[in-house]
Length: 623
Image 1: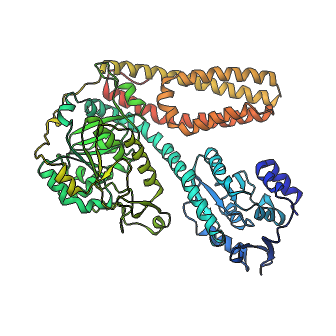
Image 2: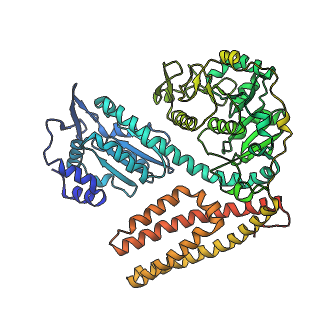
Image 3: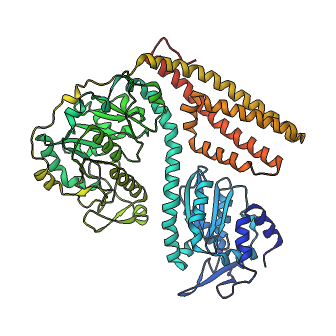
C-alpha cells in the first residue's frame, strides 16, 4: 500500500507520474513483481521475465551494491544532469543524492508496476530533493519518445545516463531500444545544446578578437575572378578519416602533377604533413582553443607554403601566429563580423552555413567557388579497425572500449556494416541533406570503407584519377594573388560608434530592470497586486528596449541563446499561472538569473571590444 506521504509528495511535485501510478491500480503485482528481504534485512525486488525471475537488487546488501554502482560512475559534476533509467527500489538514486547532493537529476522508470512497489516500501522523500527535476513513469513503451521530447525541452545541461545494471540483464531488449531512442532524441540534441552553450561564448569572443585580421585578409568568396580560376575544375577534399592512409600516394600524385586542387579539412593537414604533402590550402572552422593544436607543427616550424582558409569564428589562437597566407569566409552563425564588415560595392556578403563539420562547410565553399567535380577522400564518418582517424594525428588516439560499446551500425560505401558514433552519424546526415540541395555539380565519395553518403556516388580514387583527372597542371597560384571586393572601412567606423553608444544604453536598461525587480519584490511582500500589475507593464516596456539594443542583440543574447530560449518559455508558461505570488516569484528568480549571466558576459566582452576598436581605428574607442 502506498503511504499517504508518498502520494502527497509525488502528486504535488510530479502530477503526471502520479496519474500513471494511480491509473495502474492498487494491486501489488505479485504475478510480475515481488518484494523479498535481503540478508541485510532491507527489502529487495525480483521481477518476472521470459527467462523466469530475476533480482533487481542484491539478495545480500542492496545498499552496498548501490554505493558501488555510483562509485564506479565517472563524469558526474555540477555542470551535468544525471538521467537514471530504472529506479527499482531507488537504492542507487539514494546513494547518488548522498554523494552528489548538489547535482541535478531525473528518474525514468519504464515499469509502472515497479514504481508502484517502490512507493509502497520506500520513502519518496529520500530522493525528492530540489535537484530532482523530472520523474517519468511509463505504462506503455510508446510513451518513450514523448517523454524524451519533454526531457529535452526541460533540461539545458549535458546529460549523463545511468542505467541500473540489473535492468540491462532482466529487460535487455527494452533497454537496448530505449538506449537507441535516448541517443537519437536526447544525446544528440543535448550534444547540440552543449555545443551551443560552449560555442556561443567562444563564437562571440573569437569574432571580436579575429575581426581586425578578418578585415585585412581576402574573403575567398569575394575573389573577383573566382569563376575563371576555379570554375569547372576538380577539387579533392581531404578529411581525416582512417582510410586516408590508403590514399596518400594517390594524393601525392595528384598534387605533384597538378591534376586537381587539394584541400585539407581540420586534422587531415597533419596526416598530409607526415607524408610530406602540402595541400593547396587547409580549411579550418573549429572555435575551440584546442584548434591551435591542429596547426602546431605549421606554426612551430614556421611553414609558410600552406595557405589557411578560416571561418570568421575560428579559435583566435589559430590565426594569431599562423605563418602562411590567410583567407577567410563568413559564417551565418556569426552576427558580429557581418555587422561590422559590409562590401564596399553594396552587394550583400556571401555567407557559409554553420554546419556541424568542417567537411560540409568546406564542401559549401568549394561549391560556391565553382569547383566540379568535388571528390571527398578520408571522409569515413566511421571507425577504422583500430583508429577513428588517419595516422599522423597523434592527439586523436586509438578507439576506446567505451567508444566501441556505444557505437552504432550503418552501411558503408559497398553495403557492408561499419561502426560509427552518434556525432558522426548526425554529421553524415547533415552533409547528405546539404548535398541534396546542390545542382549542376558532381559530388564523389572516394572513401574506401567509409560510410555511404547519400548523394555522393562512390568511385574509388584510382578510377577517379583515370576518368576525371585527365588534364595535368590545371592548378595555378593565381588565386593567392587575389583581387577581392573590399570591406567598407568608413561604414565599419560608424558601426563601432553605434556599438559604443549602445553599450551605454544597455547599462541604463539593466539598471531599470533592477529597479523594476525590486519594486516587484516589495509588491509581493505587501500583497499589493495592483502595483504588481503596473510593474509588469514597466517590465514589458523595458524588455522591448532590451530587444532593440544593438550591443545586446549582437553580442550578449547570442552568448546566452539557450538560456534566452528557456526564459521565453518561462514567460509563455506563467501567462497561465493563476497564483499571482508564484508567478511573480518565478519571473523575478529566472529573469534575475538571466540578467546575472548577461552581466558576467558584458564584463568579458566590453574590454575585448575596446581593444578591437583601438586596433582597427586608434581614434575610435568603445566607451
